[in-house]
Amino acid sequence: HVCKVELNIKLKVKQQCTHDDTRGEENKKKNAHKETTREENKTEKLTKPAELKYGPAVSFPYQRIWSRCVLILGVLLIIWYNNRQGKEIYLAKQKDVLVSRTQNVDCSKDYRDELEKYPGCVPEKCGRVVTDKLVSTTEADVLLKLAKSGLDLAGSDGGASILDLHSGALSKGQDFINIYKRPEAKKIFNSVDATIYKVVKTKIQHAVAHNFGIDINKIYLTKPTFFSRMTNKPAKTVHDEYWHPHVDKETYETFHYTSLLYLNDYSKDFEGGRFVFMDKNGVNTTIEPRKGRVSIFTSGSENLHLVEKVKSGIRYALTVSFTCDKSAAISDLRFTDALN
Image (cartoon, rainbow, N blue to C red; front, side, top):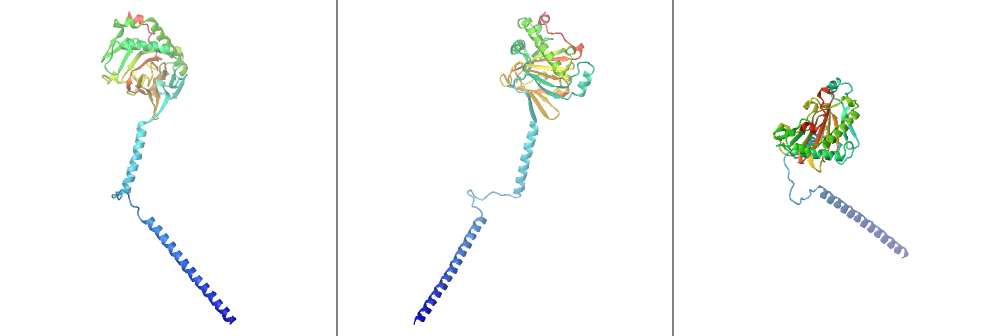
């Protein structure tokens, strides 16, 4: 009887174990099936195209090719625009206050060959020099007042007027008159103004000699020496078109060294009107006018330049130039002699 009981217990345990194994296998199969179904759902979600909120995307034949063409065209336009604008560096900004700043350039062959005829007048190097410490504010103010008073007696119909201090040539309409023949001139010019002008001219002459390494006794004041007034009026004659690139030595044959004294301020008194050197490497070198600022440069083709069009306001400057040719020299300004 005991043996039968033990046998029954063993059979029951064995049946229970078999039942448990069967349930375990079924659970494994169920879990594997669930995992497979989950993976299939994931794959289906990934491969199923997303539903667009605003309807199907627009497509057309050769879409990829056209997209690339548009991209390439955009890049080419950017390159073209940058090349058209060119590069610009500043030799002097209006806010700068410079004791002296120099930019050397190679002398043009024709310029140097001509100067070889004048011993003591050949520059050690060609280039440009800017200084804000040569002419005082008081001196600049006196000359600005003189320029305004003289130019206000007449003036060009266009955007550029000049007053040549030695010949007396003054822009009027589309022609010139002699200011020293006008009765009002005696009220404008006096010996004090002439003295200030002579002092400024002498300072510039010394600066030219010092910066270019030449003998001061070998350079002479030459004509024309003139005040200029530039505005945004449309040009009426070729004399009003001051913005064209040019070389001073070609415009004025006697010029060997050019200087400009600015009598008022860029961005304060006028917009535009910056002075720009156009170099062969495609880089523009710019000077922004500042009252009392003096710019000096060799007059050969190494210094091709222009003045930008004045956009608003009035720009005033004084051009004083020097020659190595003694026969082209002019005497210092004497208003009293001219008026008489």
